[in-house]
Length: 160
Ligand code: PNS
Picture 1 (cartoon, helix red, strand yellow):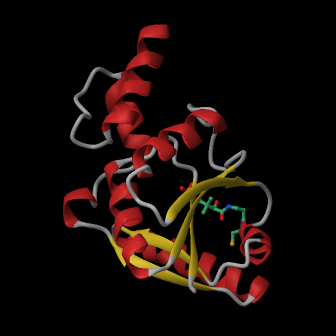
Picture 2 (cartoon, protein in one colour; picture 1 turned 180 degrees about the horizontal axis):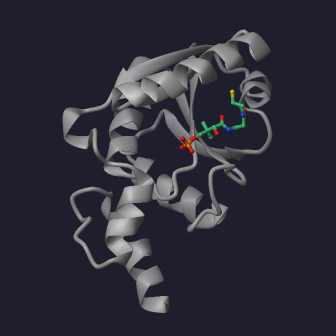
């Protein structure tokens, strides 16, 4: 049995993330979508609970996918989870440059390999940060995020 971990901030999950989830779920027996606690890049706009709940709604139709969270080193979490590989999506060449270092570091830390899926070209420009910026400036993002995510985003905008 193969178990893969797809880690990320998912702040919020996008259609690009969900495309990677669906395709990775076909490649591995079990896929854990793992939300990092306290991502280092930024203060998340969505709480950990919101990010996990949005993801659970989005993957409910995929029986071999579950959503968890982790804190600390990904390499340690992979070992604790008895997982075989890390899965990452690559949108553009600059993603590769960053991800190559991360993959090599994770391999040196816990001897785990990283499998890369090329993004669907239709999502190669989609990132969580751009989605947030466009949305909160009043732009249309309904083709960029799944409907459970759009609902939570709408509620957050209304509450502002
Ligand atoms: O969605 P993101 O923000 O691009 O995901 C980045 C993530 C969570 C995969 C990365 O920041 C990570 O692995 N964080 C855990 C801390 C860690 O292990 N750092 C060393 C990476 S080699």
